[in-house]
Amino acid sequence: GIQVEQSPPDLILQEGANSTLRCNFSDSVNNLQWFHQNPWGQLINLFYIPSGTKQNGRLSATTVATERYSLLYISSSQTTDSGVYFCAAPLGNQGGKLIFGQGTELSVKP
Amino acid sequence: IAGITQAPTSQILAAGRRMTLRCTQDMRHNAMYWYRQDLGLGLRLIHYSNTAGTTGKGEVPDGYSVSRANTDDFPLTLASAVPSQTSVYFCASSEQYTDTQYFGPGTRLTVL
Image (cartoon, rainbow over all chains, first blue to last red; front, side):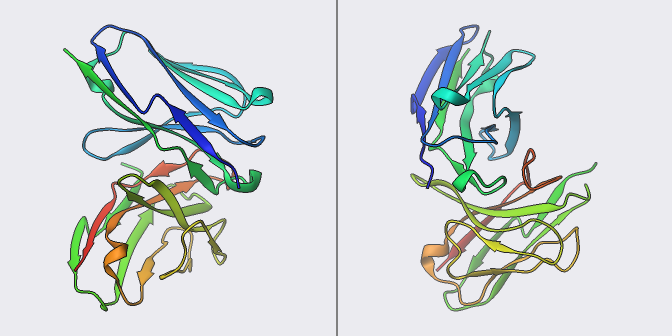
């Protein structure tokens, strides 16, 4: 089945800094999603981005499907950005059966 | 507020007991999912349902069963709980099988 790998595993930033999180996947996908899990455990969908670029406020994501990776950009980071960021891709290219990466744990210091 | 509710919030259970985790969504989404989250292992799909009346197995289905009698509800049952089923369980839904997934708040289950 598909392998989903994220880097870096941990990241510490000073408030206001920018960062790039990477997600590599082993097979072609038709469904790539980014999630944020806040320190209270809540999982929020950030982007549904099988290809191309999307932006939402200070966050943006780019997926290059042909090269099997996706990037999540966080600009002007805030302490509320802290938590774990997951990317997920479908098992066997089958829609909703998502396989999650191990996550990047981000800590933004004031 | 539209969304997904899960019950209970947390539960401590003796090994061998039967337990049903409840999940209800009011967004009229067709697809629903159950995941478990464990330290070091991330989120793993247990079972899913593309639409009411159908279910399928995910990565780690053993020891769990689900049913989808209607659009809104997707209960997860542990027939005879074991300590390795100690985890945080998340229910999720999406409008269609291939769409953005939205997660519930989770149920923390401890099996002793």
